[in-house]
Image 1 (cartoon, rainbow, N blue to C red):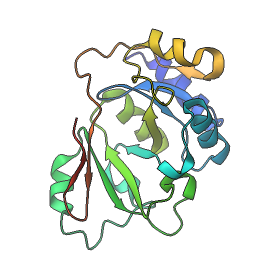
Image 2: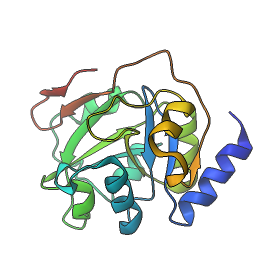
Image 3: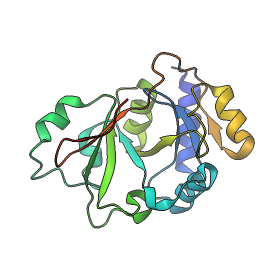
Length: 184
C-alpha cells in the first residue's frame, strides 16, 4: 500500500472531499458520514435516491457504536465472528444517525473491513461511507480506469488499484433475523 496515496485520501476526506477506493470486492465511493454535502454529492454522482441508505465501513466494531445499537442483538457473536470481513450487517440505527445514511430504514448497513486500505483509512478517520463506485444501473468499477471512466474529474481523489480477485459485492445480512439480503 502506497502511504502517499493513503495520506492524500485522508486529507481529502477531512476536507469534505469524495474519493474512490478499493474494497474487498469492488471500488467504493466514500466520504465522511457526517458531512451531509459530501454524502449528497455521492448520491448525485450515483443517481441514487437518499431513501436507499448507505453503508458505513470501519476498522473496528467500536467505531460503529455511535451509529448503531449493538446491545440486545441476539446475533452479536455471529456479527463479531464475521468481522473483519466481507459481510455487511443491517443493524438498528441510533436516533441520532443521520437520515442521509439510513435512508427510509430504521437500520444502518455497517461492516468492519479486512481490506488493508479501508482499514487504514478508518483507523485514521473513523467510519467512512462506502457505496459501490458506479452510476445506478452500471456494473461496479473494479479498476482505477473504470472509476475514471464513470466519474472522471468529478471525484476529489482516487486511490489507484486493480480489483480482479473477487468480482462479487459483499454479502448483506439482517442482524435481527440473520436473513441474507444480498449474496455475494
